[in-house]
Every structure is written in structure tokens, then in C-alpha cells.
Length: 464
Image (tube, rainbow, N blue to C red; front, side, top):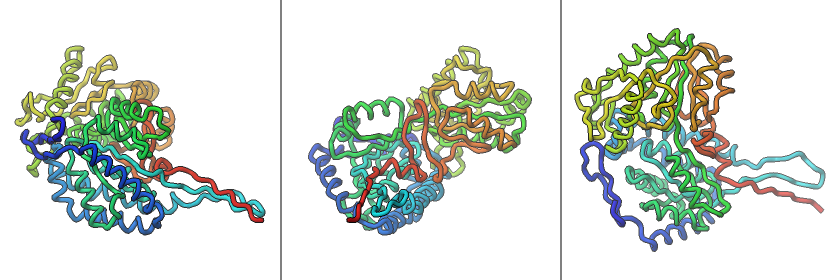
């Protein structure tokens, strides 16, 4: 990217898919000023008025899901057979849930009655919320903050990833058609240094960021001495534990999908699997068999089930971790040459399954963000728990068993933001989406997500 031009290189064919001029200082100032002024009026609207507008936004997206899905495929490479469902399933589910619970979540909180007094706590909007959204699930991640922020009475400035700038423009079009007052939602195409300057501006009241640990550190540095908060969702190295009572077929099907969907480019995708030794051989055999059924190819083909990674550099990083693991004793069970479109030096990368791995290898410790998974046998729940917690990340963890009580007991000992049983790689909008350790801080979704986007104001009213 040059100093003043944003270019999106499509992983499909290496062509320039989008080209936009970066915002000038004058344009940034105008956006900040308009956002602050618009929020002053917007916070006085009713929750029902906000809901009506946000519901129209959802309707716009669902109506245009096919076209928007194709744009996603061109921008970041996910197969077109899957991209529309990002809108019709996840986006719609999360947005409508957060709209539906807003009235209760934002309602005044009463306290014990006291004669002669009226006392309650009200949730006030923060002001101007800056949302920094990633490319891997460009609408699913953005909707987590944008809809609740608007519903809370905030204004929003969206900066989308360089790889997916059209997503920001789609949001603007949707809100305009839904008759959102001008200035309540805006977007900016800006570079990293411009983002830092914007965050330092006193008109920004909150930052919602999804991205890397380094990116999260940069956000914290930009906030500096300012007394504002940031929600930071920074990825993971999410583990799965397959107990001896797991339903083998269901477990394999879900964990293969959890490992390789979106070419493994999911913050809560499965990157390491621990299998009870009694099931290990059968699990690995079935896992490899199903993995070999993927079809790597052009994501614009409806037959493709595994598209290119977002960039050649991302594929090289994953391949480097694989090579290091093999050098240190790991065994690769997938022959990349069996995938006809696998090609070194391009984003088109075959999936890989590794065994004979251990925690001295990066592949079991550092985020790969690619179609690679390592599998280890374990002898007991205690060993599985120790290995699952042996990570600087803690976003999600999944347990595969027929015993709910056992899953809860194990989950209580795991250092993670979400604990699943018999599913993975999913965000339930009714539950808090959060991480521990280097997976970040803050909450989106659920009623707790609204607490992050508002501030409490206490009313203590005495009758004389």
C-alpha cells in the first residue's frame, strides 16, 4: 500500500480488486466532528426507533447476501458456497439477538426502595465508538460491536481491514437506506498511523478491535494516558479434548470442519487436538480420511470447499510452522500433492494433519491461522487439562464427551473464555464473547456486551 492509496489484492488471482484513496486529515477531522455532533442527538432517540433502523439494516444484508457473499470471496478467498451464509446465518442471528435484548439490557436498574427517595442506575452511551474490524469474518466480527453500539445510543466510526474495505462501504449503504441520521455511522479508509492518531483524539470514547496480539498492543499504546477502554479480541490457539466416550463420527466431522473451515483462518478455529489414547488411532484415521475429501481450488467455483489463504505470506507462515515441526520429529499425514491446486509460493495451500507433535513445537503453541492441526494422545482428563492450559491464549476450548457433568468439571479447570461440549468454532450471541490471557480483554454480545458500550449513571432523587 502506498502512502495515500489502499489496494486490496485478491487471493483468487492476485489482481487488484479494490483501490481507494486514504482519507486526508481534513476528511478525518470532518468525520470526527460530525460523529460527535450526531451522537448528541442520537442518544435521545428511543430504543424502539433504533431497533427499527437496525432491523432494516439486517433486512438489507439478507436481501443482498448473494452479491455480498461474492464480494467476500473476491476480497479474502473463502469459497462462495459458504460466504452468503455469513450474512444469512451468523450476521442475522447476532444482530437480531442484540436488537431484541437491547430494551432489557439498557433498562434502568432499580435499587431497594427508600422512603422519600427515588434511586436507580441508568446506562448512558459512551459517545463515539471506533470499530476496527478484521478481514477473516468481515461482517460477523464487525456486527458484534456496530449494532450494539448503535442500539446503545453511540455513534460509530468503522475502519475495516485493508483486505475487506467494501464491507465498510456496505455498512454505510445499509444504514443510509435504513434512514439512520447522518453522521451516526461513518467509515474511514485509513492506515495504521492514522488509526493511532484517531484513537488519541479526545472525541473517541471507546475502541472495539479484533485482530492480532501485536495489533492489540498498538491499540493500548495509542490510548496511552487517556481514560477510555478498549475491547480487544486477539485470537487464540484453541484446543479440543476428545474423551473416550465421544461419539467418534460426530466428533471427527465437527473437528475437521472446525480446523479447516475458512482455511483455518478463524480466531476460534481448532488448532490443536488431544485425544484419549483408547480412541486415538481410530480418530486420526477417520480425521485424515475426511480431510482428504476437501476440494482446494478457486473460491468462485461452487465445487470448492477449501479456498486460498488470504495472502501468500500467510500460507508461508503456516508452511514454516509445519516444516519446523517435521524437522523436530512430527509426522505429516496429508500429501499436499494429492490436492491438485496446491502450489508453493501462492495462497493456495493444502490442509495438513500432524502427529508425533509436542509442546516444544510452535505448531502446538503459537497461533497458525491456517489449515493445519496437530493431534496428540492423552491418558487422562488431568493430562488433557494441563496441555489445554499450556498456552498463552485462552479464547475457546471444546470437550467431546457424553457426560455433561464431566464437561462442566473439566471446563471449570480450563483457562478459556468459552467452553464448548460437542461443538466448536461458534459464537452464541446470548453468551459473552470474551477471552483470557493473550486472547484479549472485554466482552461483546450478550447483555454483558452492552455494559462495555455504556457507562453507569446513578440517580439519587430526594423528595422534599
